Structure formats: C-alpha cells, structure tokens
Image (cartoon, rainbow, N blue to C red; front, top):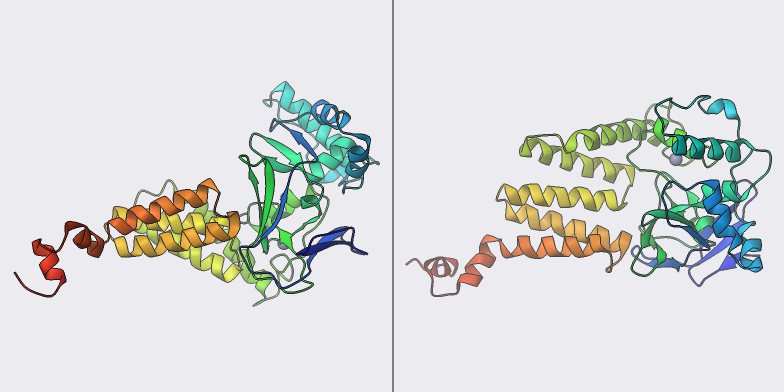
Length: 334
Ligand SMILES: [Zn+2]
C-alpha cells in the first residue's frame, strides 16, 4: 500500500532504501509534481539544536508524530569524519558542528538528526517537508526541487519524461561535484549512492567511468569560468559544459545557467543569432526545472527579448520600410 499518493506519484516503502517515490502515469518533463508547505521551518542557515527543538515544540501533536516517521541518518561511524575542528572556527560554529556530529553518530534518532537528514534549503534557512522528503537522491536526477519564497512552498518539477513506475529522484548535492566530493556530501545523509554515475567507475568504457572524467572536467571548468578573462575562451568552455551535461544526462538548472552565459557572451561579441538561440535554450530549461513564476525564468525571458530586439533583421523592422536598410531587406537596392 502506498504511504502517500497523488494522481502523479505514489510513495512506497522499499526493502533497501527507505521510502521512495514512483510515477503513477507517464509524466512529461516540466510537469509540476509537488507544491508543498513546510512541516517545520527554521529561518536561519546556521541553525543550532535549540532552534530545531524550539520549532518542533511548536508543532501540533499530530505533526510531531508525522515528523518522527521521517528518515534519520544517525548511527554513523564517527571515524569517517574529522576528529578535530580547526581552531580558527568561531565558537558558535564549533557548537553547531559538534551538535550535528553528535546527532549523526548517536545510537538513536533525534529531532536534530531527522531535521539534518531531510532539510531542504529555503530563503535564508531550511525546512523539512513531509512528502518532498521522501524523494531519493540520484546524481542524474529526473526531477528538480526549488523553494518559492513568494508562495512559501517547495516546488518539485519533472525535468525528464517519466515512465509509469519509474522512480522519481532529486539531486541532494551540486551536480558539478566530482565523485569524491559527492560521496563526502552524501555520506552526511547516511548512504552511498548507487546511481548510474556512481557505479562501475573503474570499468573501462562504462557510463560510471566516463562520468567520473566528465564531472571532474565540469567542476574544473565551473571553478575557473568566472576568472577566465578571454570571452572566446569562456564561450568555448560554456559550449564544452553543455556538451558534457548532455552526455551526463544532466538537465538541472545548471544547464539553463550555462546557456544563459553563452547567450550573454555571444551578445557582447555582437553575435545576436547565437545569443538568441542560446537564450531560448536557457528559457526552455528554466521553464522545465523551475516553472514560469521563477525569477530565474523571468530573467531568461527578459534576456531573450532584449537579444531578439538586437537581431539585425529585427533592427531593420524597427527602423521601418522607408530607410535604406529597409530597402536592402526587401532586396531592392537604393
Ligand atoms: Zn550517484
């Protein structure tokens, strides 16, 4: 029996991975799968145990009960984490690290361990969602989550076409992280990822092995992109990123962001046709991942409109048929 269900997906308990979310029907990319208000929310990024417990105590008894059904990544081996905190770390931050380490390695689940395992970033804070928390991770996700501050809701969109029964996954970490960084990050959630990008990484020619090289390169380009002074080199790097993401099957907003960078660099160089083409791709990807109301989508729309106005043929139209260039456009020489 499904633990929870909508017309689009059902949440089921799996034998090996806790709860997981599966598509009930074929779903087109860009479909809004979930729009959910928080079960519990903390209005600060660097929260302490006290903040989480205070927020928990304000929940109704039935909400508290539901909170305890969520996953917890406690009981972890402490030797897998550094045994010292840098002396330069401020006291309050030290306390936060110690509390979280304790919750992670304790023998029993706690209010804090549940919060840490399920929290999703909100505007200047974090929140836990009852249904959104059930989506598992994949480094090649087929859905994307984003917090909408205006609505006060977490939105999850399908970013690939989904088949009936297909598991719906999100990426809990930056998709540009290489495999060692992803493993480190995901260890905090208490699992080792076994997605297509994380398996068979030593088998020559396998997706996993190629993925390892591609993500390493994605990270390398992403790290050096902003400090690269040459526009031509940036353009080359952006195009390489798009191609690497396509081969990785990554269609997260990173793709839209890269297209928008390509569009802006092309526009600066005066190549308006490439700028418009790239901005269209950016807008299309933002619409799929974040929906039409997202600020990022609206910005991409604005850029596309601005670049389109600067196309040589649009400038001719705007100048009107009586001008010299207008005559040229109609194929009649002045
Ligand atoms: Zn993975």
